[in-house]
Amino acid sequence: MDLTTAYLGLTLKSPLVASASPLNRQLENLRILQDCGAGAVVLPSVFEEQINREQEILDALIDHGSESYGEALSFFPAQTFASDTSNHLALVEQAAQTLAIPVIASLNGVTESGWIEYAQDLESAGAAAIELNVFFVPSDPAVCGSDVEKRYTDIVAAVAGEVDIPVSVKVGPYFSSPGHMAGQLVRAGARGLVLFNRFYEPDIDPATLSMQTSLELSHAHEMRLPLLWIGVLAGRSKASLAATTGVETADDVIKYLLAGADVVMTTSALLRHGPQYMRVLVDGLADWLTARGLSSPADIRGKLSHSNVGDPETYERANYIKVLQGFAQH
Image 1 (cartoon, rainbow, N blue to C red):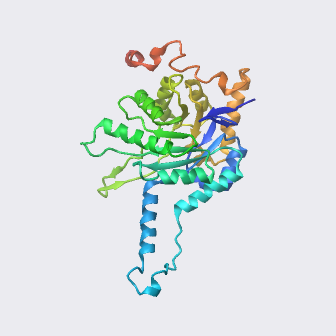
Image 2 (cartoon, one colour):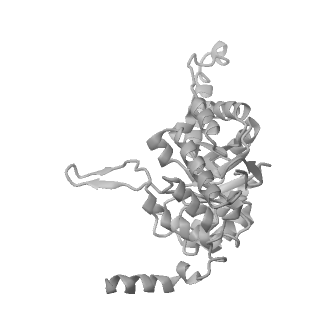
Image 3 (cartoon, rainbow, N blue to C red):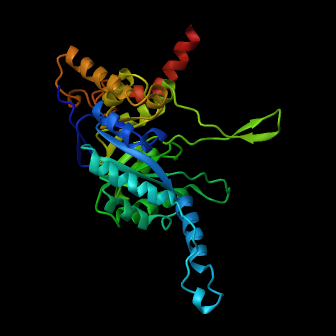
């Protein structure tokens, strides 16, 4: 079975990608993911706030003693500065040198100036591609939708213009017209779209009258929304399409491929079951294809996209009406 897949202009040995998670901080886990059939790995994100804070600390250290006696002007404080971003660059370099599969670096920020230079550092460290994870909640009511969209496209254009490796962007589903926004991101320089980002939302504890935050792993029922937009964009967008959210079984992988995804990313399933679970997903896909006499994922990719499905109303409002009417009849 040939599971070879093209993504962002890269050749992957399978369409399964281990997306950014704490698992991917360990080189040994990355080796396991590769050995279990992952086509690529996305390293944990570096956050713009990390970079900015580390620069503030470094500036303070450099300025320390500048008002002291002359013989102290060249003295640098005897303090170990353990830079998270430096450690991250080391991980990128080690992973790129160790693994035979593409290593994709992830940047998470909200401004175009925050980490353009760091994107270049990631490229120099050996990253095969960069995934931009733009996490921005427009909590100011004065910020309009077009301003939000421009922030995304400005970031993509700024980073894509400074590196030679492909850039993808992980976006949320809350644009007024996701299809149009996808086109704008491609025009800004995105070679790939990762659908969708899960925005972690606060909760309220009525017992303590306080805000609570927690990380909840995704479940299969959450894949419906990305499945819809993967199906709509497949064959219509020039970008590579990566599906993420809700991938728990090989059947979920197959659904995304049928809708038109180029690759399928998973995090929650690997966190639940360990990096070895990648083998279950890869073998499940291969077995399903073999049982139907198919030779590769290309044989099913996009077969049930909006452009190819026999009844495109299943993607549209008409199907919503049918579903409601059918439910009422029960």
